[in-house]
Image 1 (cartoon, rainbow, N blue to C red):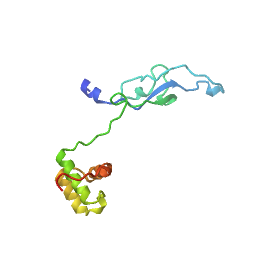
Image 2 (tube, rainbow, N blue to C red):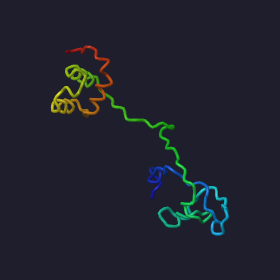
Image 3 (spheres, rainbow, N blue to C red):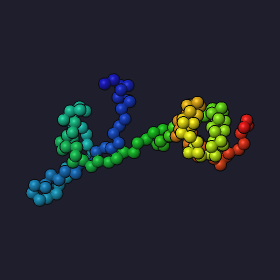
Image 4 (cartoon, rainbow, N blue to C red):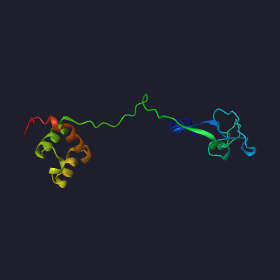
Length: 141
């Protein structure tokens, strides 16, 4: 695997912490080995990778902790559609014509309009919902 491929792999959403194996369970006691964090005992993809290099216990004996995923400084950003002035004007006219409710129009008419301006039906529906309070008169009615 090249360095570029390794950088494209995202780390797992969890890590294994201290070992919880009770080494004295057979004699009715309680004794932990003190291993603080799981370290793979072999190359990734091999059976040895499931055994801890420090305590030789299987990874299942180590406490599993979820690691929060970080994207762009910790906040996940959703995709935001950008519209041209022409698209906005056409959508405003279409919305005004349908009474700002997409279900007032025929399905074929909605599909045809969406293809014409290059947006999905869902995007048009969300745009109409977000702008129905701003239904100012159109420039060219």
